[in-house]
Length: 171
Image (spheres, rainbow, N blue to C red):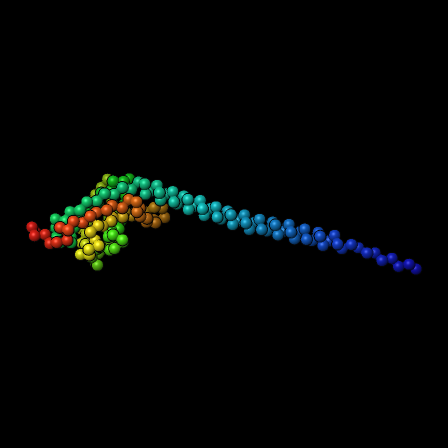
């Protein structure tokens, strides 16, 4: 009696499993990278749309201001005129280098709701700080999602005369 031993080659099965694993790995990586790139492109496009909206809104803002210090000492009237096309919600008043020039009980951000081509005269009391010879008025407006932004390019600069810092003897 003769015994026949069949030998099968298992070499081909190992290569087949390796190819399947490599293809699976490639597909998985492409799905992960594809989802990541879609998320990145959506985020970039949203940032671009938001930035262009902000630039558009800032381009429509124009602000001018003048000072009248004929009243009491350290109490000045600033006439703020909205020469732009959008409503200004607030203004932020600061001195040089961001110093707060308002008296301690007054906020440096004023709610004024100034419509286009209108003016207002908020009563502002300044501190006696020497750094407050110039004040800057930054217009703040709302964009979508009720977010308030300021346009630093549209800041109005006012030089406060020394006569505004001393008591008015004519009163």
